[in-house]
Image 1 (cartoon, helix red, strand yellow):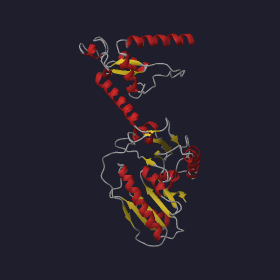
Image 2 (cartoon, rainbow, N blue to C red):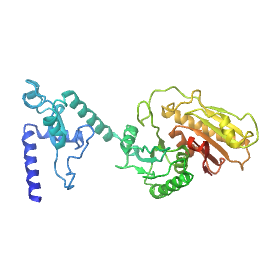
Image 3 (cartoon, helix red, strand yellow):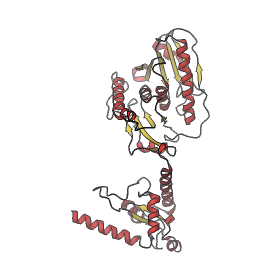
Image 4 (cartoon, rainbow, N blue to C red):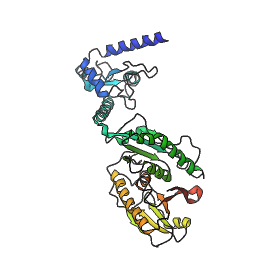
Length: 391
């Protein structure tokens, strides 16, 4: 087995050498540098100095021609083939699988324009990442929990795409805080306590030691979970640690902050009656009518409202929208604690984007602000019901 493996390795090396014999060594080295030694086929990115099975380090790369070095080759051309056979603009670094795919298995499916696009995007990404300085490093935090029967999860790949070019990942994997394979749903009475306990325990074991020893300077936070739990996550991160919080968009389907979208003007609407139980109506991604809150707390509650002109699921498009929310919510909490008894609890009824829910936990100051009793809307439980308390 070892002998046959070495023979195959020797044959592959001879094939690679023969195919690239007319390419100057300086061009090969430049191509390795521009590609960072990884397969340039879109979606692959495999390291080409490493055998994926044995983990032995040796050259597994093929230098492929976009326009073949002979007119009779794949995508060959009578005049361009000899002219471009050693031009770096016509060369790609590929793994064995994708070299065979473009040159033998599916030549027709890999026209020149497609391969040039792959090369361009890969090398631009390598150049971008190489230009980022150490202070742009960030630790990606992923947190997901069931929303009803959904457990969509958050992808590390999507997160990396979202933070570039402002930041780059400090590690090759994320800090994941979600409870995997949980059978509980948010309609179950034990769901909130179980999820909260796991989130706090995982944070203490995976994040807190890094903060204690100063290993982490910045977080990029991606959450897909019920809003009360996202507030808990925000409270754990707090405003002390530098963090960027991201929002999943529907159109386009991405976590990257968008440039479009109108400026938002958040409105604080004071209560129409003084005294009574203080409540907060957060109508941002949808409208919550006050009668739904009164059905839970009684008709004598004192309801504050924070809203926008047209509540909508996808209104939070820009990073500036989130910054504006933080400022408005801070003012709101100051107004509430100035009017209501310091021993009161603020009852929170949210309809929010996920990033806003995280920021509520970060903005709130536990020692200065009223405790928040957060409710969750679930039709299976007949409407709003108490989820958890942020003390």
